[in-house]
Image (cartoon, rainbow, N blue to C red; front, side, top):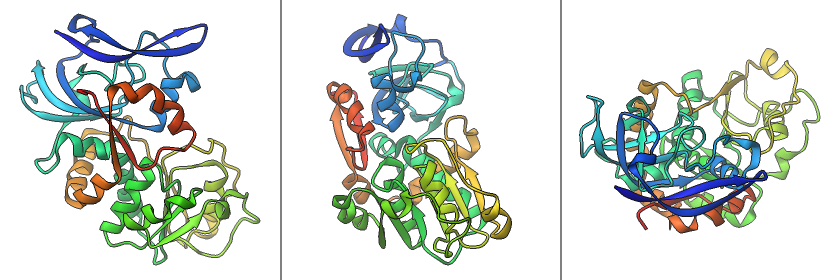
Length: 327
């Protein structure tokens, strides 16, 4: 069978894309074939689409680091034709062809059956960003949350938006940090009780400790922002770090960890164990307000993918962007 896909090629280190017609014989190896319904646009997708960071080494390549859809063929006894599934992680869209195609073939270990309450569109309105947010939220809860508000940095982006909403739905007071004043109303509408200008956190910390301002933090920025936030955490609280949009350096001291018992938790949704992923998806089904999920999501067709890569890298994409690969 033939299908449409965003196909990336590289010449003289310049990456370009086109909507190509492919057939099943060109799909990579795997024991489950999925008719893809939706994929998403994540920061890493923007890097791959524009060739930043050389995340893809082998071309031609189909990007898209996550997808949802319906099983069309399976040699894995856990999945039958017609099952609704979601895939995040496992370097799909990097070293294995990804979700920006009407058909995908993958290893069944990488899939999770969708909970009954989530549609394929819901799954990608959540996507890798939402799964990462839930993993971060569960991590800081496991360590214990302080009495002060929980801070979310990079709050207007995909991970940040879902994190703000999830924390608010779970009953926490949420402070949302953003460098975009025009996003304040949006962040308030999805659950933020306080808006923190990014400039407050962007400067290097003035000392090893500051006032205890945050009872927990989901950090999607990294670098100086993360170093600054560590000095303002309540005693015994945790920072779940899940993004490097600001860079991967961390100029800090051991003082927050020794004198305040701050926990720095690394969140990686790529190689996340099956049981952990399954639990996270079930809780996402329970907590997410479907109306707000719809409000934070923009759906575009496959032909829009190439132009959106530079947009997300420039910080111009708000909320969640879902790719309807069938249109």
